[in-house]
Length: 245
Image 1: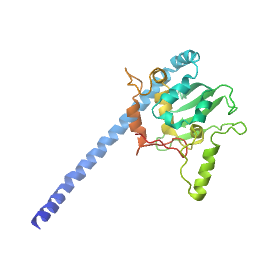
Image 2: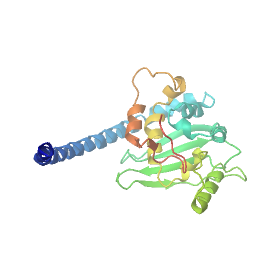
Image 3: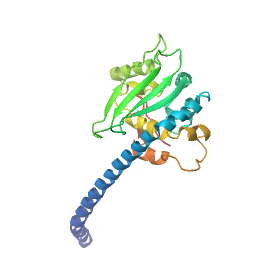
Image 4: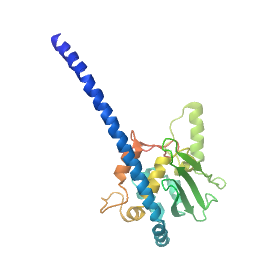
């Protein structure tokens, strides 16, 4: 009984210091959040400065068949979002462009530019993001004009309807193209705009299983830790979530 009483007494005595430590930790986290925001803004500013070089880079990429498909498939996270049918459609992808706002470069528009293909009539698939208020991210989706019987997202849509009506199992074969109609999708956008795009040459040249030598504009492992919570990607194509192993 004495031992129990002493434990209770110790817990009571520690309540004050523990509460104080938690408050200090909250104050530290607020500063860390400010640092993250400022780093993101600085990164975006210099990404905008690189725009002319990215344009020059694309002129070289135009000489390499299926360059962007290769990059997407070698990215350690994005590759798991691409189904076989997606890969065939993405093989017509000519370029990826990140159009940043000159007023606030953290806001951007992602453009997937395609050549003539049997899947859709769009020459560009576009998704826009406004991160001015990180607690209220604004997303603008542009519709895909699928050609008859070629909608790769049709199965996903049907699966969602079945899930709402009869609690069917989650569809693990959701198309990557569902992301273009996702209400959010900002985390996947961050991977594309701030990792895949600036480091495209690295992903094309280096096999995804090899260790990457040298510095890059962002560290994919740090990126994954920031954007993935509970082992899932928020904003992956609807009904499909990726768990890191």
